[in-house]
Length: 321
Image (cartoon, rainbow, N blue to C red; front, side):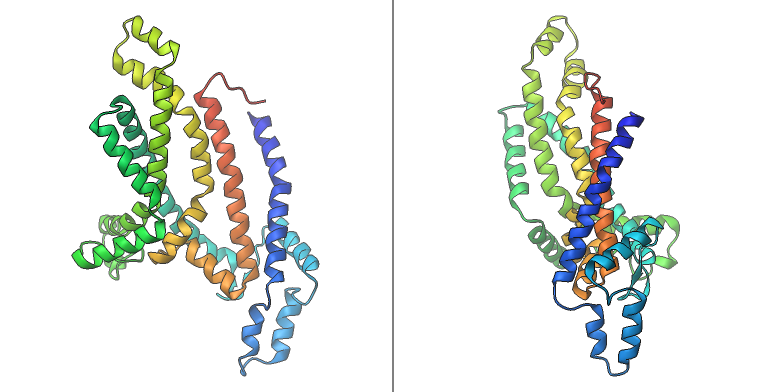
């Protein structure tokens, strides 16, 4: 397993290099840079702007700037955010934690609800339970996340009871620890539901199909013929094999956390990486964009690696070489 993990990490290095180079090139192909807006400010002299461009090598060709960025990344220096006027790590750290909270709550809700619903629909195939869950799943798959977010915010604005955006209330700092916890939960409800609905519907449908396919296998018939309890047949023998394909999806869910939550964060005013990335791209804050891209690439690699390891652990028939 250790050899396999090291091999995957070595393979991921050139992949991340290509991703970063393409991102850097695309950022430089668009017209202008961050200092163009500063040139419009009469209080900032041209000499000051030229000194900053020389300091960060922004007066050099794009390939030279990319090499300079790679050199700093090798020393774990992610650069300086021109828009926020602080190092990139100080900008990313709190936003990354906020996105992790939202993504983790969405992941938890999705998998804790979708797997039991998929099993329930498969066990009651053709009955009203199965038909109702199928209808709700198709609705969940067809509703765009941004429309659902706007719809939920509109409904809450009418009936009240939940905050309309943000992550904390105005009096958050004055609350006890348990008050802060429940305040965070209230702010999490709308964005978590928005992110989870589509994934929940898809995973529930896949789980239902996998479970029905496994239930037709010969070893299930043999287990029943031996007189094993139905609960053991369903939740030990059938479930373990039906859930294997979903473990790979779990890895992709991990790798898609940043992109999946970005639009929802912007609409729900959640202070995460989504709104930060939008600000960085619009202001052409090159080092902040590159750090966010690199973080997404690393998460993609780690997600796939976790999926492979979990799949090998879940199914003894799979051997990683």
